[in-house]
Amino acid sequence: MEQFYYYWSMWFLWVLTTFIFEKTKRRIAVSVFILTNIILSIHDIALYFSLNAAYLMFFVCGCVYAGYLGMYRFRYIMVYLTLVAAYAFVYLFALYDPVWFIIKPEWAAVILIVLLTASVERNFEKQLVLFVLGMCQGELVYSFVIQKLAGAMAVGGFQWLNACSAGMILLFGISKYEHLASQIGQKSKRSNKGATKMS
Image: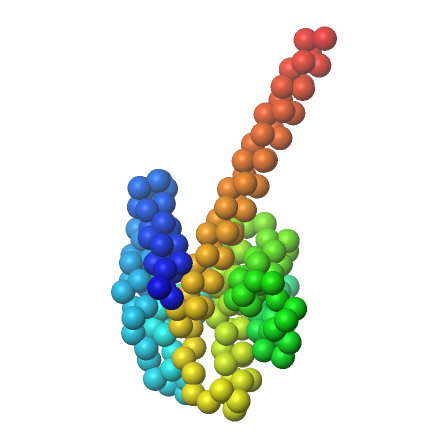
């Protein structure tokens, strides 16, 4: 079940957006994106590489949404390039010396990119865009580098989709945790102010 994590992660995200989030146009767009992505995941597109259609959808929509959010500043470009380099480095290092990896390289890459993304950006939407684009471009760079050794290979297969979808859920969890911690902090400040006034 190579695609197990991907399908379960995407269905989980679809349930969240469809039944839990507020009813907005953005929610509908995200729900449609998730369902379309699941449908496209079984198709490949033959270009210079064999690209998974769901991977290509992630890449294109990530680029479009980055433009919509105005993420064309130098800071975002540098963060994006850092994420791409981190992804490619993890995979190439795992290929060169796999004995250093306790967990699978794809999970190591996801954890690293999630931590980097969450540490440099506070806005969840921008975190998501940076993460997805970093994963997409990193996969492309890695595939381009090793194509002479491995020959023709599929880019953005289920191994990548598993990692990407799990990383999105991890980012979502971090975002909700930060939001909850912020709310608790604000409530504690208010209670402290109230106690000070009473005294």
